Length: 500
Ligand code: AMP
Image (cartoon, rainbow, N blue to C red; front, side, top):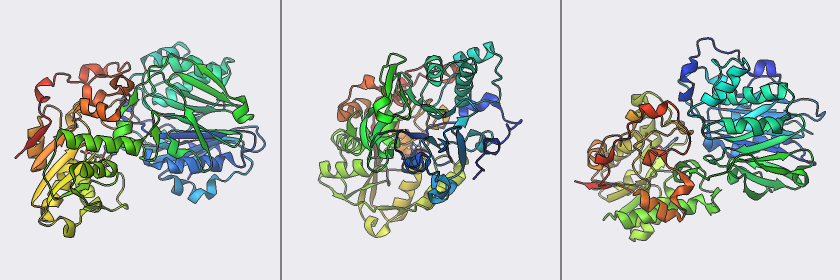
C-alpha cells in the first residue's frame, strides 16, 4: 500500500523498462466509479465495486477520489488483491468523498515493473482508469510527438492519458479532451476519467470491453460488469460503443450523453466464454445462461457416451450442467475440487511451474471418478496446461475413459485486445489438428464447439462480437502485429472432434 499523496503512489519510471515491449502488457482489467449528490463515501463505494470485479484482474488495484473539500483528486493503490491493498476496505474509507474511480489490473508480471502499471493513471489534470488494450498506438503517438510529449516510457493507457492531459493543459475541458482523444485510439477501451468537477465514462466504438451504467439513489455508478454495481444499485444500461457520458455532482439528473464515434458493437466473444462473471448480463442476457446454451449445443454437436459429466471449476460449471442435462448423464459438480488458495496460474510465465500450480489447484475427487467413463467440460484450451493436467489427474484417479469437451472453438490466433494470449506459437491449436491436440493432452476423445454452433447457441449475430482468437478477423487496426500473425491455418480446420 502506498501513501496517499500522488508523489509516492507512482514509483519513479524504471529506466530499464523496455518501452518497445509495452504491448506485451495486457490489460484485461476492471473499472468502476461513482459520482452524485448524496453519495456518503464515493471512495469506499468504489472499493466495494472493484472488489466485486476482482475476477477481472488480481495484479494490482487503485482508487482516485475527490475528498470532501472537493478541491483536488487523491489516489491510492498498490500491488495485490483489492482487499489486501485496501486493508479489507478500511484504507478506502474517505467519508464525504464526492466522486471516485477505481481499477483492477490483470497483467503479467514479466515485463517492466508491475508497480509502474497500477491504475488509475493520474496527474494534476485528470485520473484515468482503462480496461482494454491498444494493439497499436501509432495515431496517439503521432499526436503526442506533434506536441513534444515524450512517449518512450509510457504504456498505452499512459499515452492516452498524456494526450488528454495535453489537451487540457491547452485549455480543453476533461470531456472535450476525451471526445478529442478517444477517436485517435485503436483497440479496446472502456474508460473512466475524472477530475474534481466531473466524471466521464467512455467506450471505444467497437465496445470490445463491457461497461455498465447504473443508479444508486440519485448517484450515477459505472462498472465493467453489472455484477460490479454496488448493493442497492439499479442497472440502467450499457454505455454504448462510441458513447461518452458526462456526469457531475448532480448525479443522475445531470448526466449528458454524446456519441463521440459511430458505434459498431464488437463485444469480445471471450467475455461471454470465460472472462465475465456468470452473474453479469451482456447484450441483455445472463452470462451463466449463455454458457449453459454453449454446453447444451456442445452435446448436440459432439455427444459422448459417459457415466458422469464434470466441470473444470469454476468457469465451466454452467456449461457442464447443461451438457449433462442435454445428455441425460449424471452431473457431478465436485469431480474436480479447486484449491482456491492457488491463484493466477494462467499468467505464470514458466510452463513447468504453471503445470505444478494447476496440478495443485485442480485435484480430482478419486471417489467419484474411479472406474467411471468421464466427460470433463472446460470453457477453452489456450496453451493446454489445464487440460493436460486435468486429464492426467483423472487417469491417475482411476477413470475408465476421459472425454474432453470444450464449449468454444479452437484458439488459433492471438488475442490482442486485453487477454494475455498474445504469442501465437504458444497456442496449442496453432497449426495443429484436433486429433493432434487430443494425442498431446491424452484424452480418449476431444471435442470443440464449432464457431457456428457458438453463435447459434448465443442467439446473437456473429457481427456483434470480436472473434479474433477464433477466426483471425480483428475489428480494429492492429498495426505491425498483422505481419507477425500466421493467418494460413485452413488445413487444420475441418474436424472439431477426435477420438481414439
Ligand atoms: P491453458 O491452461 O493455457 O490451456 O488455458 C486454458 C484454461 O485457462 C481454461 O481452463 C480457462 O478456463 C482458463 N482461461 C482462459 N483464458 C483465461 C485468461 N485470460 N485468464 C485466466 N484464465 C484463462
